[in-house]
Amino acid sequence: MTVEEARDDDEVITGKFLVNNCYATILFDSGADRSYASTELCTLFNKKPQAFDIKCLVEVANGKLMKVDKVYKNCNLILDDKLFKIDLLPVELGSFDVVVGMDWLCPLRAAIMCYEKTVNVPLEYSETLIIQGEKSGSKLNIISCIKSRKYLMKGYQAILAYVKEVESEEK
Figure 1 (cartoon, rainbow, N blue to C red):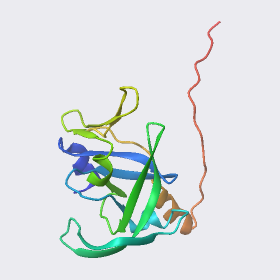
Figure 2: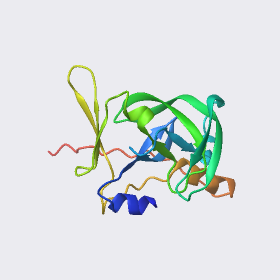
Figure 3: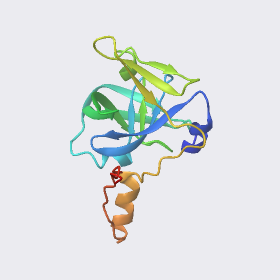
């Protein structure tokens, strides 16, 4: 499934969020028992993977089996300015940078709300964090860290800009 197909599918929640200070296209997947990061995204992490206690075979979407024996422990996942920790297994992913699976969703008692395209995460004091997934027809215009790195490696120039809307005072 491509990112565009996922955005148009009512049963899939995707979005762009920060993982270890890198923007990543994330798929929230209740069908995945663990959480995964693309090997390409992992090259941008400022940390080394650790040995994974369980040697496992992971079947990716194209049916290919991959042996996974490493894990990136306690990665930072920023959702709506809230910091969460997530363990990520490095695998070759197609269209997504990260797949958030049940190992992260269950302990937080998160609920995937397909119709609303949200992931609801209960917080302290009876609050709930509502993570809005991308909807059909809406597209974030954020270039991924991976794409920008590729362009920079090819010699393209880059300009970093921070744009903030300021309300003007009318006289």
